[in-house]
Image (tube, rainbow, N blue to C red; front, top):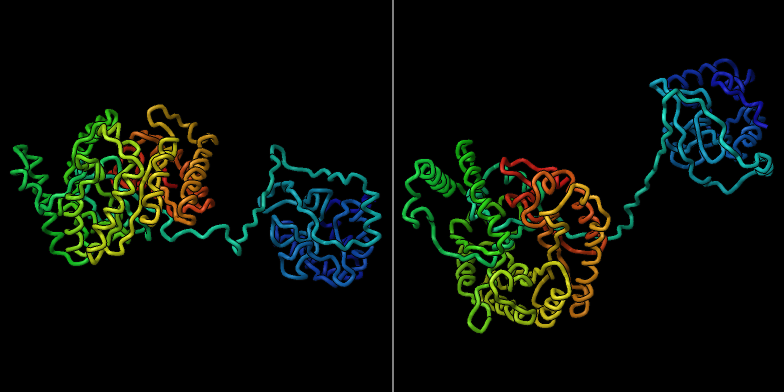
Length: 546
């Protein structure tokens, strides 16, 4: 029945627009044909030529898919285009508007080419949105049988492609996330290797500012070995920088930089000389080996946070538009295993005197305290410690309403869930959000293909379920945060966790947490933490954050 249909474009034009419409109409359509790269445009709906009326059944017999409404002529099949714009070949390539439909596929007219002179690819066709089909068309469809698509000639070597149209509705969101949903973490190891002195770098502040608004958590493995001392100049307190000429010049440069920063008002931004940065990289490389040794042996040395260091940390957060969350040392214990808060109280008083706007936490992965210090802290005791911290904050006017987060547990295995259960019984109403950490892969045995394993992607979903079950048992609706998420453990893996390959796990994390209602996710670490950081030591962003 479709044998009367011409197969070349000019003949098809003459077939549809016969002599009764004049040569001007045919010429105009040929110009439109050239202008639109082989797509036929022309008559508006309602101006149906006699030959079109005559050929409707023929076209329908070939494909069963060219539809007609008596009052509108040959109109677009969907409402995506301007009304009455096309007869054959939609204005928008890749849509269904007014194309000739052949079976379950739609194609351009046989023999047509695109602007590059190539044949046209076959593309899938969605179901017909019109319910009204004439009796003649229905009969033609029945005659068409299985409606197999007609063959289309393609250039040699041209592969068939499939076009996927994704329609995303933004009218009814599944979840609405916190404006600080994507947040950052800095590890206290930056005190040990000296990078904390460079947080005032203009480039580093600019990169962090691009991620605001967000939280900046200062915490990690060395949180529970951190001690505060109200000292202004650490170099002088050590009796000088030492005999080495380069080290002395390096320390003197740090002091001079601090003096220059003190003279600035508001955000304190520094431009560090290249020589100074190179010396710092050499120092950090040596300290990195020391930190790795501590991590593998699970024995950590104490860190001293001075008043000067806290000033630099807060200046970085404030200038970057980040809200600082400070994790206090929870491993300072009294003989009865209660929390020794003397160092924390000193830090709170100093911060209040500077009017620093800070939220607080206590400890980091308390489920690991036995292996780190040989002293375990159960959930109920940790809950009492949080209540003690809350009582320290309330008399301090600036912190009387400060937010408190915790308990920052590790992966929710059986013993960790038991700890969380005990904590929620005692202090579930004390914290503003319940926090936990997640690590996908053991960094010592990771391979590049591990980053694409769906089994690893799905481990996070099971953890969310376990955490939500405990939290909702005691405090239904309490906010839950994922803090300190990393792709690989033990500081990451060079050229893997800091590469584009790790981005797939990161994207999976963001999407799954948002979909499951997790309020905030904190990425560990923004800068200088093994090979899991987002920014390298040259202050350049890495591809693992996509």
